[in-house]
Image (cartoon, rainbow, N blue to C red; front, side, top):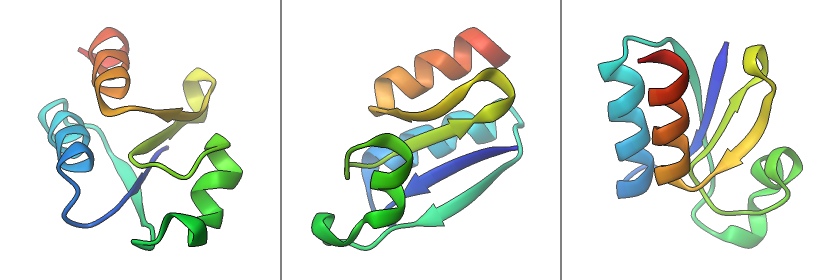
Length: 79
């Protein structure tokens, strides 16, 4: 199962969600707090506090950041 760490209202997160939806992929979302210094869950997964972050353990992705990188990965892996 894929997991997406996101911040509601974040355009970069929405970009990744659109790609996941366009590809018909199931995923679980984890909404993070708006204050970066309180984003312990996403930091424990990716080593940084920015969002979006994708986890796709089925393909060895434990915490991919950067929306463009995530969209490219999803296209390469699932399109």
